[in-house]
Image (cartoon, rainbow, N blue to C red; front, side, top):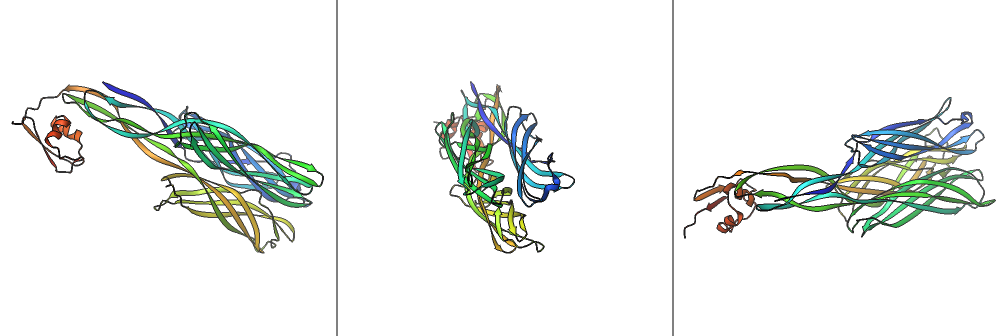
Length: 497
């Protein structure tokens, strides 16, 4: 009589961010040989994320890349790694699929009796969990109304490895490599039948010493891959997350004619989601018996998809009066981007605010120096496709350059890849149980009058008049629903012939 079905749905959850301070004192470093710190670049990645009931555990690694001048004026670079763990409390389930996004809020290098490297990390854990909703899909022997609901569904996922490599002829002898910084951005993520097409952009900066000079080389690599994904269909929303598995710089070539070779591997995790239409019984009416109906309600979040927008940003770094004037720009060893605000305004435009931070290594009359600078930005992005009301934004620096404009002013030009992920909230209200009660008393009155309360449906009339819909409509063919407040409906049980 009652056809209850179990429908699979996905539950998105993003926990509040958790801050974690990582401090590291490198063993064995000769602090007396550090004359000046030029740059400290920091990045961090999650090595494992595990879900438990009520919390998630994140283990990760922080990479500190220090560039400094030694007592003889030579430039040196060293890399250090420091492991960390973070516990994020929230509405997690042990079976959830979880991932972590880690941002560097600030970093610092303190030289005293020893060297202390520190960074403040912001860790945000998100989860996708499978849920089952048992709802009334159909019922026999009664008058019923049905409705459409939309439920998010997690289709499938796959992880792939993308190797990358590129070479640059330095045209001279490279003394040492000071550091390597890599940023990645997802430029394209589209569903195909049983698959997805994913495009990734990699931007890397190699800082090196050649002929006693500090120089830099920017690598810009774009990769695209067609990936098989079980159950995916055209129109599904694809979520792609990319991370650097490993990378290295290999010096090749011959003496006095070195080649810088960048090589490594990216890991791309691809997930397909669908917000599917489900039809269910909304309400029902039995002419002969009372019916007790129990409703359940649950809130879901649908992943609508993503889009990447390329934006230009400019800024200026100003040197203090106590510093010598800058002569030339030598290197920008890294560029980090922190998004402070992202929302969709009343005109449907995506508003993104944040800060790009970098160290600018420059030369003056005394040799090499550096300045840490922050470039604030506020972007207003328009799109032919409407943005979702709820957006999650990630900004990545895909190109950076600097030049001396005046003696103490340095212009900085940036290219940002703004990846916007859209989400929409849906509420599923459904019949979770039905019980047939006692037999209804038979209404023997010849005529009944119903005064509408407003927004009444045909089913409300059936319940109030204890009559089937076809009988009511036969006597009141001009009725339109929903009824207006105060509208009168007359129903005759015995019609004279």
